[in-house]
Image (tube, rainbow over the protein chains, first blue to last red):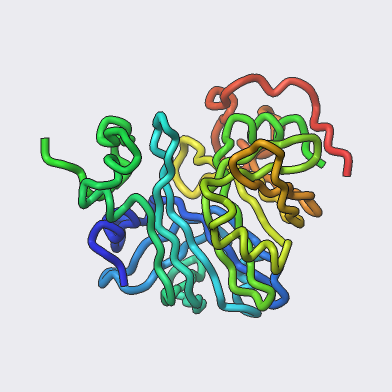
Length: 151
Length: 144
């Protein structure tokens, strides 16, 4: 479902917990909600773990109980010029989980679709060419980007 | 609809994330650049007219947009603004691309309007005053 470059961008297991993603939920009649939170892939890289502060009191928590369809996006702005954004979007179905001993419940999202732009191309070296500039020098240190070229 | 602090924040953090939804409730989320004009949110995109969000908004105009930033403290400390509202597709004459004009029905924010001397920092247990970019003169002026 995920390429290696996408996994590295999102973060697998605990390594990805600090990355901020934005998750959209929706009412069953199509009124969306979007909020920043922490999200990463589980250890085997097949599902998305979504963590929240005071999750059980949140609007998204109540929404997911009524409609489990969610979308999550991770992105980073490449400081151009030109200004380019690259990222990964996952659409899927969320299940509420509560680990014994954990203070907050979390969502486990099974992806039905994965989209990405600028992630796999960077790993292949073609995104910079298409955009007409060298992105290596614009990368933010420690942003967990995939496809770092060897010096 | 927006307070002075919220307007300043969006001007400084123009990269927002928009959520759209199919009429039967399947959401989609994507980053894009935004600005506030009056009480409307203008959302511009790359190749907007070819995008999935563009086709979805034609079927269902409800959208949500969020701007956020991480505070320089241990997680999970995020400040942000969320707008829920309805989008209209606009295409300025001469412009190369279409854009959305979002009329907010609700505005939520956290960590933006709080007075530096009071609630939010105390709640989070630290002093944010020195971390803020720019002055926050004047009291909140939201008129709902």
